Image (cartoon, rainbow, N blue to C red; front, side, top):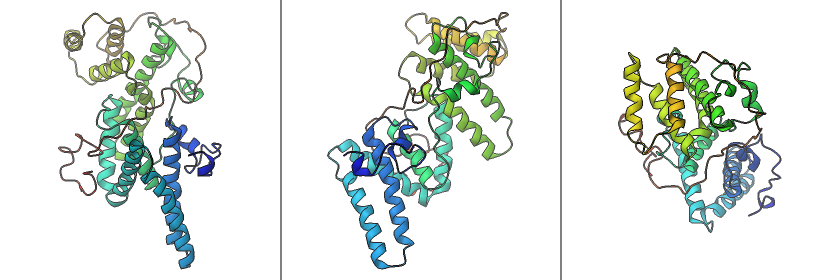
Length: 328
């Protein structure tokens, strides 16, 4: 399949019927980009058909939609066929039981901020976000790259601020500095979130936290692991430095050797929570200009696993929710 097959010039990142829209949201596979654009095109054609005033127009619109769907339903790749089936099922769930799906979505996005991403594959998560948007229950924002111009503008300018990468003069490299600055910003948003009074404000702040966290929690390297450890440490309540040291030790005992990155990060969490005295000197010097990339750390495309879209997340917390469509 080519972009011509999809009437797609890759020049409309603001429109969901074009592949560039999904590239801006972390979809790196061109095939997946086209699939997602076609899903929206097919949905719009069906909507047009339902609103048509003649049977001929109705049949023409539905015929075009079926032609689009058929090429994905019968795609040569079993992975692509599974991707398409999952997306169409997810859209049906969001249309039929939006209340239950919204509650489940909120739980998943909260867990993902903490680095719990194994409940579904990256492609499944993208399908949930797309289906939610297509059903009219919330926008799927562009991926926020830690090195993007947007990220640079959003950070404080003072190196004395923990949300500024130049605050971390002890870091091994610039990537670690940026990760730790982003963690500090997420920690602040988390504290603000805990002071909210409305569900809508809580979800809004959680989504902000997710946008910053996503490039780090989807990493499969040491930084991704460290982020998860830091989130676990920062969620605790400590009455003394000794209690905090015990929590740090519980994580360290599972490591084969001393890890300077984790030690630095544990100290950072201690400072953020106030259990460890902040460093006296904040006269940090920049390591250089921050590189700009609008597609940093795009989420990986993976084969879909059959099963509940929210596997392992809904059994207890949402036992009384509507269950139609959730069991695949």
